[in-house]
Image 1 (cartoon, rainbow, N blue to C red):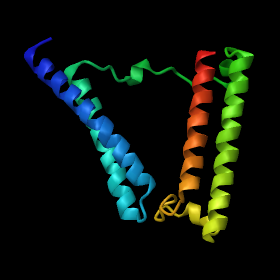
Image 2: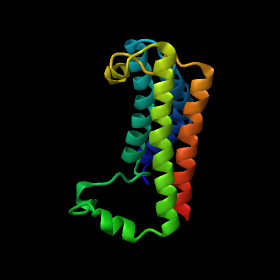
Image 3: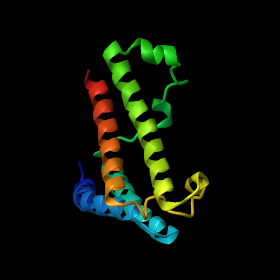
Length: 158
């Protein structure tokens, strides 16, 4: 590794250490944003440090991002994908999908009912969805997402 790569690798490490707390802060602020401008600003604050970290890592040669030649010719079909999975993995993924879809649908419906919004308000990209969530709704959202990720992780290691 030449000197330039070592310097870029050090910058990538510094960028990674800085990006982690910035990403958590920006994700939270995006979640509680009350205007579209706030949501866009904090989304950019979330994305830019992560992209900079990956770019520095790629330039330093410490990561290997996929190249187009590395991609398969075609995506596997559902039968190819599920035939390689055990029954436990399929059940865990099905439960995770059910919790994700039904839980988020329930959460959006209860939030819209509480706040008096129509169901079509969720389709407007210029209205932040989570700006006026109460503590109970935010906690439910976190529980749904963590449960879904835990079940997905369980399916990966099963």
